[in-house]
Length: 229
Image 1 (tube, rainbow, N blue to C red):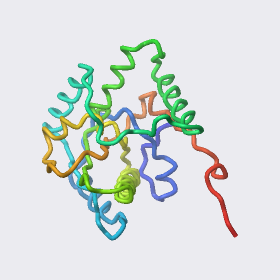
Image 2: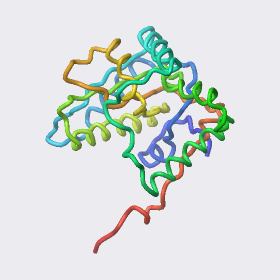
Image 3: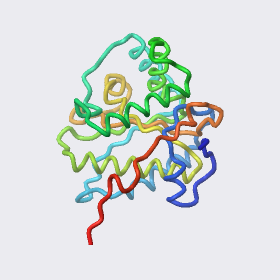
């Protein structure tokens, strides 16, 4: 399934055509459109209406400088303590296999074999560039939040992704930024009591980029859903 760059007129179509886009075209997102998406996303539900998300939206020179620093840190091989680990360790089946296959499918499309360590590192640094998207978003939350509020932030992120598809845009949710928080704190007004939860690239997906042909597998509904009468 190739990258769909049309606007989505239904939620079903938005879900079907939403992928994690890993290469964007050099086309800005209009400020009014961006504000409209973010305004609508505020209707996302949250337990007790806590609305635990704080959203930092970067474009223009701020985003350019932010990315420059992030790439330098990444390519220098520096490591930072993540705010939250990406996955449980060790990861168990079938999730371990799902994750492994996704990575192998992506690198196959990129033509970067496992033994090409430098090639994979350079590609890894594309995360630091928000995959060349014109909009970079960092979502932070209070350090005192618990798992229910983290789920609420996930719901908010889903709202952004579906609203972006409605507008003909694409996104890449990036837990990656939990591992590289220093540049976030350098450029963004993040209070001491907050931490980086997730990031997101947003823009117009590049239909010519082979990596955007990655349409990740999903388990059959029957594998994960049980019905009770």
